[in-house]
Image 1 (tube, rainbow, N blue to C red):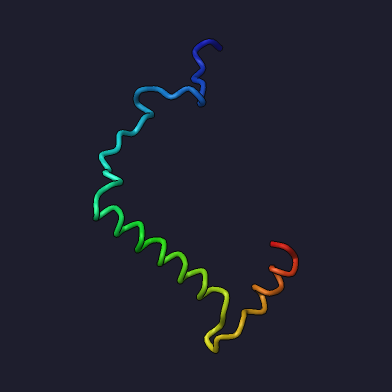
Image 2 (cartoon, helix red, strand yellow; image 1 turned 60 degrees about the vertical axis):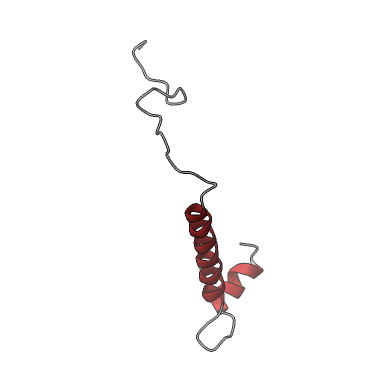
Length: 65
């Protein structure tokens, strides 16, 4: 069993190279857009169409979930 591959040891083929520049304006704009999108989605999921809190959300919140 010496030929087993340890999943915790990265091999050269398992490492992905990134060419993303986190200091670019395009990267920052995309990050802001995704953050706003996630926030608005979370807010929308907590209220129904009439602006009231969803009963299922309240039920899960009261259970500490």
